[in-house]
Structure formats: C-alpha cells, structure tokens
Image (tube, rainbow, N blue to C red; front, side):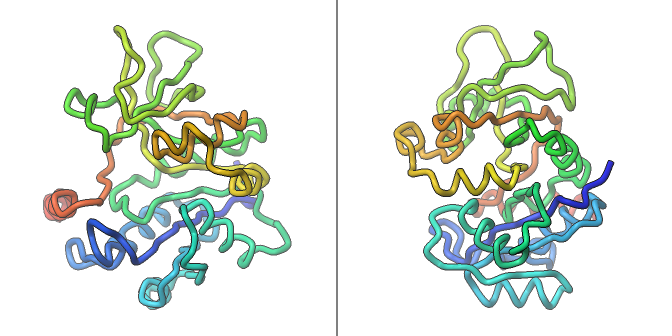
Length: 252
C-alpha cells in the first residue's frame, strides 16, 4: 500500500490555560511535542511529518531535533485551521491529498494506530476517519471525555472494524444496552474535505457541545470510526502529566 500522497501534521500552540507552555513540558526528560513527533515516526510511513505552530520556541525545539516545523498565525481557533495553513505553505502544489492530523498532547499513541488511520483514508470515499475505544465506566459521565454514537455493520464490532459516526457528545451516548465509545481526537482527512471544513462557519451543535467535529456532521460530511484497544494519555492537566511520567518510567 502506497502512502506517497499522505502527510502527517501536528498542530501545537504555546498558550494553554490549564498547562502553560504545555508542548515544551518534559516527560521523562523529553518535551511533550517531541514525544508526539516520535509517535508519528514510529508509524514508519516514510512520509513528511510537519509540526504547525505559532511559537518560535516550539519550532526551534522540533528543528533542533531534526524535524520540520512551520510558523502559522496565532489567531487560529482550532488545530484544523492551523494545519491547513501549514499544509498550504509546505505543499502549495497539492501533492499531498490525505492528511493525518495528530495531536501534540498525545505522547504515547502507537505507530500502528497511526498507520491504520493512513490505511483507511486511502479510500477516497472515506472523507474523515478517526479513532474510538470502549469507554471505561468512570468515563461514561465525565464531560471531559468525548463520546460518539457509531453505526457498525455488525452487532459486536471488533478491533480495527470501521463504523460511521452518528453523533459526538460530552454526555453519555447512546442510551440502552450497548457499547459506549470514547473518541480519541486524531483524524485523517481528504485534503479537499479539510479545505471545505475550515471554510464552514461554526455550527449550532458544535457551539452547544464545544466539539468541532459536529460541524462536519451538520454539513453532511461523513466521519468514519476505527475501533482500537488503545487508551492513549491526553495531557491536559497536572494529573495527566503525572500519568504520562509514570507511564514512561514504567517503560524504562
């Protein structure tokens, strides 16, 4: 399978209300953004990995590590806007048609999962792909955990099965005796879909739930969900940072 028209983009901004200078915080002696960059490298796709940032400190950290970093506006409302600006700078002739959109605050997502995203988005009918894992009972009513109601072609979806997202919410959805899925916020985009998406106005449901993926669903853009067993750590708080530190200490 060829990934020659695919690129990995990682948005990173310095401003964070809960964890100041979050991308540069060190976990096991390594900046968080470098952990995310290493996850992308571990996918072994042999494609460009570009960090899109609004701060020279982040850009220099990536460049000193031997990576590619591009400066973007500090006015972007979302990572999607930021990576699209960087994509237009890096690839004005539109060689890359498919974009893997990672998050700079996921330090332990596996290369295999990133590769699976890349494989699914090779299908031009898949407009956006993302990843889901079974939620733990503690997460059911945790509003910081985004849940997704997903339709599958069989009753008991298995690892790597692909479904179709019906709705995303911070509430516990769907009700009844069924799986509750935790949405992991990494994406694969068709380039033309990303361009269309960033030119749409925020939608009513997006504003209500504070979830930009609902803008896509309200616009009739399909989002496909890949089942994983991974539960990567998203670093948003001091507690998350401690969890990540413990995770990497246990590995060493």
